[in-house]
Every structure is written in structure tokens, then in C-alpha cells.
Amino acid sequence: MVKKSNKYKSVVIVGAGIGGMCTAARLLRDGYKVKIYEKEPLVGGRANRIIQDGYTFDTGPTLLMMTDVLYDTFSYCGRDFDDYINLLQLEPNYQVAFADKTKITVSSNLPKFTKELAKIDEKAPENFFKFFSDVSEMYRISRESFIDKNFNRFTDFINIRSGARLLQKRGIYPLWNFVGRYFKDDRLKQLFSFQSMYLGVSPYEAPAVYSVVSYMETGLGIWYPKGGMYSLTLALQKLVKELGGEIYTSSPVKKVIVDDKKAIGVELENNTIVNSDIVVCNSDLVYTYKKLLPESVKLKSMGRKPEELKQASSALLFYWGVDNKLEGMLHHNVYLCKDFKANLEQIFDDKKLPKDPSFYTYIPTKTDPRLAPKGKNVMYILVPVPNLIGKNNWEKGIERIKSQVIKRLISEFGVDITKDIETERIFTPQEFQSKYNLTAGSAFGLTHHFMQSGYFRPHNVARKTKGLYFVGASTYPGGGIPMVALSAKLVHERILGDS
Image (cartoon, rainbow, N blue to C red):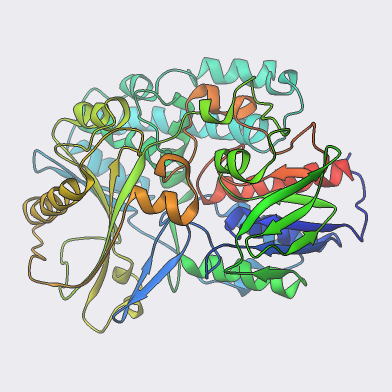
């Protein structure tokens, strides 16, 4: 049973990312006084925005699923999410182009989707429904027993009944092997496993439970907030301010102040001291431990040191404003290269820039033309790349990859933007490190292999330091907008329980 909170407790949150603002809103609803300090000029963390030469670019997450978590956040605060945002369900979800010139359109309309699958393998529709049934159950088990809950001890994680059901569904198999039980064609294996790359982990390493992302796409749908993904960030900012929260941008935190094993506030870069009863860090966890916390505060996560935590891969992002209709492309598009396995090995094992990159394309102007000048389009290209642990010639590599992407747009989608790019912004792993303090420039933070999932992921509370908590992709349940919003729900429950 959650205890009632002290209505006068003060909270400082380090970072105005999605997790930080969701936490703030919930705490404000319960009477806490909340101040958020954000180092950047705009709130949102990785979920940010660039406006350049008449084009509006979302910079971070572009796939919105599991919207029930966001509705729950606003509902808890006595608000209706629909009053703050206009959500549109995308149909179809996206198209995938393979290197052999075949394409498939992924849809939440299952009869339509199975017809697409049958073009590749006539047995695929029947096998898909078996797959869909199994992963939908896996999703329900995971939400109930492993995602929507805090862990105080290892026995909290060992839910015998749910664990047995998950094992029965082969939830801890490698994802690639799990998908191979249902589909024999390599293209279909890729189609139902590449989603783990959203979390910065290879489908050869990810546990099969991450197949739930594929279920979320088709079973729950992919959504788009009108005005761009940054509309979600603005909705949360508005909610926090309506509830009485204070948000200070361009206000980097220099350190968390700990006295006698208790967090008592923060010191800003301008040397201002802000006292509080509770500190919640929405900053990258490894950065937080190494740069913001005193050495006396130790990471209590399986006996590991912060630097021993494994970082996920990263992303190279091209933001292009183009004077091109982009006919034949959808709101979301994916290109999967010829040698899928070699591509993954180069990124995740060798830490090398891929020789033949796969990539994802987000064109929000297909749904929302207002984000670009009339008749023109916004293009967001995400290329999975290694983090900064490996040694790469990034300057030459970026130019090569840019050229390869443009050539693939021509060969796989029939779209030639060679002379049509009116404005460009490139975002690199180096900038993920410098702008967002993400360790090794990892766009996705900590990786999601089994030993960094659930109970084994860093916890949202510093047990030996009273009043110190963590929220965001670095703690459980993990990365992505819905998981980060759930992280906020869990740390809020933790704070109330400790009050």
C-alpha cells in the first residue's frame, strides 16, 4: 500500500526529458513542490525540435506506441490527454524495402497485412497469427509482472507463475531464433526482429521478449501527434506548469549535494545552491554517477561500477528539408540491407561504421504538411551506427553514408533528392554525448540485453542515499517514450512509498 505523501516536500528534478516531466506532473498532483533544471534551451531531452529555413524537424523518438501510459499520466493528474494533443493513428504503419527489391507494407489491419506477408511466403499468414497470439500473451505477461512494477529484491522479479509462462513462450530465447520458429524466409525474420534496434540492441543478442515491440506496432498501432512528436513534449511542459511546477531551461546542474547520506539539493553551474528534500535525476545514469554525484554514492546494481554497464549502439541522423513530393514513400519507411547479419556485427560487435547501412526514414509531412513550406517535405533519416567506444573516421564515414542513403532512396524507393535538399542538419553520436551527456554517445543509453533488463537494470532509487532517485531510459523498464513514462510512474510510486 502506497503511503500518503507529505504535502510540503520539495523536489528538484535534474533534466526536463519526458521522464522528468512525467515524474514532475505526478508529484505535483500529490502536493509536492517541484522544480526542474534543464541544461538545454528547450525541454524534452532527446525528444526535441529543430526549426530551420521554414522546416520543422523532430530530433528524437518518432514512433509513438503504447499510448495508454500517456493517457494514464494525464488522467492521474486530473486531465484528459486529448485536450492537450491530437493523436492520429497511422494506417498503414510503415513500409519495408529489402535489398532484393521486394517491399512489404506493415499494417494494423491484419487481413491486409497477412496478404502482404503471403507475397513473400504463402504459409506466412498462418504462421503470423501463431506468432501474433504468442507475442500478445508475452506482452500481457511482461506488462503485468515485469514492466509495470518496482523491484525491491530479487524475489520480486522471480514471479514463478509469470516466469513459467514466459519461459513456455520462449521469452528468453535470442530474438532472432525465436522469430525463426515462425518464419523461415530471412526477409520475414528481419521484418519481425529489427525492432530491437529501436532499443539499441541486436536481434541476435536481444531476448525474445522484445518481440512485444512488433506486437505493439500491429496490435496497438503506431500514432502520430499532430504538429510533430515535439507536441507531446509541449503537452507535458504545459501540464507541469498548470500544476504549479517550475521549469528552468539553460540551467545546467553541476552536482547533486549529498550530506550525511542524504540528497539535500543541487548546485547549478552558475554556483547557485537549490535546496530540496528529494532529488530525482533524469540525466544519463552513468554520467550522473561519474559527474554529478560524490564518490561516496555507489551504484548498487549487481555489484557493478557505472563504467561496467554496457552502452547501446548509437544513431547517425540526417534532417533534410526537400523540395520533392517523395511519391511512393510513407510516413515511416525502413530499408534493410542485403547482408543483415554482417551489418549488425559491424555495429554491435566490431564497433565499426556499417559498410552497407540499413536506415529508417520518417516523413511527417506525409501526414502533417504544415511542418514544411507548401509542396515540400521533411525527411528524417536514422542510420544505426556504433557508439563512440570503437575507433572510426567519422568525418569520412558520414559523407560516405550520406551518399549511400541517397543512392538507396533512388534504387529502393524510386526517389531522387540529389538536387532537392534545401536545408540540412546532421546529428552525430558526438553530439548525443556533448548535448545530452549520453555516455559514449549512445543514442539509446544502456543496452537492453537480459542482464540489463528488469531487476538487473539499474534501480530507480539509491538505497544508501536517502532522497535520491532516478528516472528515464537508464533505469527500468528501459528506453522509448512509453517505457520512460512508465519509469516516471514507478519512481513516483517509489517516492510516495518512501515518504
